[in-house]
Amino acid sequence: MWVSEHSDLLGDHRLGPEQSQRFLPTRFTVNGEAIDAKGFPCHQIACPNCHLTIPRSLLELEPLFLSIFGAPASGKSYFLAALTWELRKTLPLIFRTSFADADPVLNQQLNEYEESVFSGTSNDQLVPLANLIRKTEEQGDLYDTVSFGNQTVSYPRPFLFTLQPQPDHRNSHNAAKLARTVCLYDNAGESFQPGKDSAAAPVTRHMAQSRVLFFVFDPTQDARFQRLIGQQALSVTPSIKTMRQEPILQEAIARIRRFAGLKQSERHKRPLIVILTKFDTWWRLLETDPCPDPWEKARSSSNPNETFQAFDANAVERQSQLARMFMLKTSPEIVTAAENFAEDVTYVPVTAVGWNVSIDSKSGLPAIKPSEAAPYWATVPFLYGLSRSIPGLIPTISRRKSES
Ligand SMILES: Nc1nc2c(ncn2[C@@H]2O[C@H](COP(=O)(O)OP(=O)(O)OP(=O)(O)O)[C@@H](O)[C@H]2O)c(=O)[nH]1
Ligand SMILES: [Mg+2]
Image (tube, rainbow, N blue to C red; front, side, top):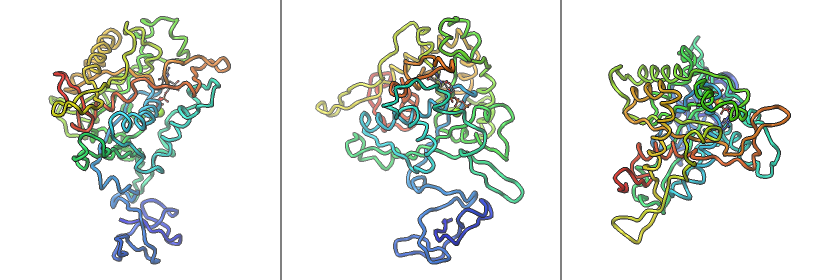
């Protein structure tokens, strides 16, 4: 369907009286734009089922759905903001791939997250983290409501990005096959609790479409972890509550099995990445210094004069082994549940804000100076997932030291 442009053409039976009319066009301009009932050429298209607008890039580039799920306050929104902020630099500069908003209007909320945490270069005041990105709600700006007769359905609004090899990418001749529209969602942690996904609020069904699943696990919410780290380090996360996060993972697994039609006995073929957040507060427990970014200069085997940056999957797997051993000590049930569900599980420790988290003396809450925010390994889960699901897009040094 198309969306009318003339300001008199208002009212849609699915979306309400203030929305522009949706229509099936019969007349077009010579440029192929539909003409609305008042003779105006139109530019936006909409879904024939829910009538919500669809950015054109979703039709032109194959979509790549990625899902982020985890308990309330585990750090999903912070991780998402750090991920997209860093990808805007890392993908073009290191991996010669452009990463841009497919629809700035849809991405507005995420852009605001990025701006408040990372763009305050002149902001040298300590700001509590809870004020920079607020808790994600279960309704409001991040959702669109559609009426199907008496049934109203609330859909989560996606964040959409285009991902395209640049002309200097080593596989640029294959750009059309490798390019994607990346589709991400920021859900409230409560939506992943048992019984929260319904026909009226199918807010987490993207998980069944997802090519790479990101389970955000917050070790600092785990009682066994808190005993291990002791009182001293917990001063950085003073008001932390404990919460069992295994039910969230089990519920997500049950939903994916249900909506993707996966048998109980079958293991999921797509990668599951367990993101261990707030690494700034517990990195000492891994007993090694944090590793540098996992990419390095590589030389082409067919043309020794050609060098390029390659993603080092071996370094990620080594870090994953360390993190897995740590998880076996503090939360073995997460490791068991994840590995029983998916064939390919990787553990990646991440901090979304960097190493300088302190306590704000006024509020007693964890706080940062936005000018010092520097995420660590925030892009690694995404790059690792891409290297698995779209071979050839991110040059990768894999287990046998070969390049792909
Ligand atoms: N130290 C530290 N704290 C973090 C980090 N990321 C998030 N936090 C803390 O965790 C809190 C919750 O983070 P959010 O990203 O809002 O959590 P969420 O998973 O989106 O939570 P919901 O929206 O309720 O589902 C923040 O207010 C911070 O105090 C991090 O990298 N390091
Ligand atoms: Mg959130």
